[in-house]
Image (tube, rainbow, N blue to C red; front, side, top):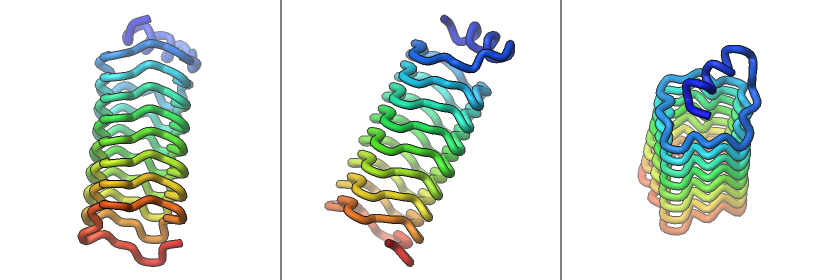
Length: 176
């Protein structure tokens, strides 16, 4: 199924696209809010400025995808593969990224406030100026992550691995 076929089906009321292959698809500014894309293959897809709010992307493959400025508010990305993904200025407020792989992902100025990042792999991720206030980062791997000027106010960092992380200018007030 091609991207334009999906948009047609979505407009007709279909919301379940579990396991769909949209590898390398150009989905800039697409509105798939509330869709079910569990186990979807979106590696290398261009989802710049896409509306994916409240979308289910459980165990989806978003390896190397471009999600810059995408709205993923309250989306479920549990176990998703986002290795090398670009999420600069993405809105992930209240999103569930538990056990997701965000190795070397770019999250510059991303909004991850109140996000669930329990056991998430953020190894060598770039979180420069990201908003992680109130986020649950318990047992998260932030080894070698760039957290320069990130807001970690009231974030739960219990058991998180921050070995080698750049914390220059990071806001760490009232952490658990």
